[in-house]
Length: 324
Ligand code: PEP
Ligand code: MN
Image 1 (spheres, rainbow, N blue to C red):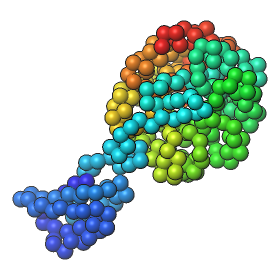
Image 2 (image 1 turned 180 degrees about the vertical axis):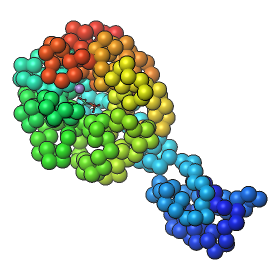
Image 3 (image 1 turned 135 degrees about the vertical axis):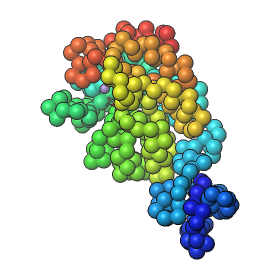
Image 4 (image 1 turned 90 degrees about the vertical axis):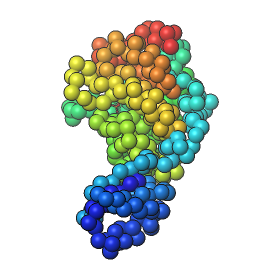
């Protein structure tokens, strides 16, 4: 971290700041003609640049290293590989999670599970607690939805991933293999801290309007509480473009591979909102080096209770898998 102070700062006020900084890291001071520069070396992750800016003599604070530590590849070179009962995500293992946006009936989820398994999906997805923009929309079967997912898991052997919307619902997640934290809860810091204390892989989706750094800081929240099994999922972000549901930030995948050792998957369904775009973007996601995909599959998209327009049929899913 580099801190630039006003050249007229008194020795007393500089000393005061240096004393505070030395509580966390080593300082190096250089006095130039136009400013006084304090260089900080060591672990500065616990320092908030905004707090330092509160000193009146400070003109600028610049980070030179990332504020996340546990998720940082600099301190953990090898890829993290998440193992879910033999299904691996990360470190060169490509895993596809597929299933409907929402669990609707036993027949729907069991049939979809069998179909996606046949095509090569390794994990079954299905929403039970659904985040919906309108309170009048279908908000999922809730606990009953998880029970139906468990039936599909028993019938197919596929591990299951489903979204947690409230810590009050944790009791239903005992047999869930991966807990999804959806885009809308990416910065629910209480929730992140709590699930950091659980021993289950977490699928952390990127927030609708969150930067890569904010996303990694959310992963850091989970990891700092003890759970290092975090899978990141790029699902599109809000931009000025309105033609598609979101803007699929695929560049973030290879970019983040250098920043973090955590596995990253892509979700072309939520990223585009259009079923016909899922196939080309599934190819693209794999091509840029992602560790897997999440794809919404519904036996009858036109009748889906949620996200039908972006859901592919089991037959289209089969083609996508062959192509991958
Ligand atoms: C979902 O996976 O069904 C979902 C709601 O995703 P997101 O949080 O990315 O919108
Ligand atoms: Mn959905």
